[in-house]
Image (cartoon, rainbow, N blue to C red; front, top):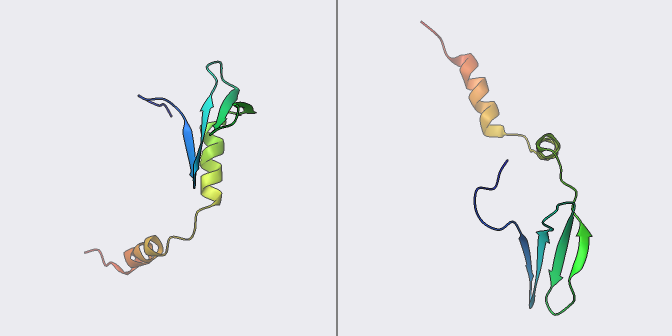
Length: 79
């Protein structure tokens, strides 16, 4: 996956504060910028697309509508 445009960062907004997390230019580490506090260096491990996909697949719930559609195919009579 590639980011086509824009700055890569995550903003966590909690009540009265915002924490910004952005990667270092060299990669591997990132900067956490809590509002009103000094920046902190945090490790950011890059994961392969396969690892991310596997994690997403583990979290999927059963797709009842898709199951009904597949069962409906069995009932179709082809002429």
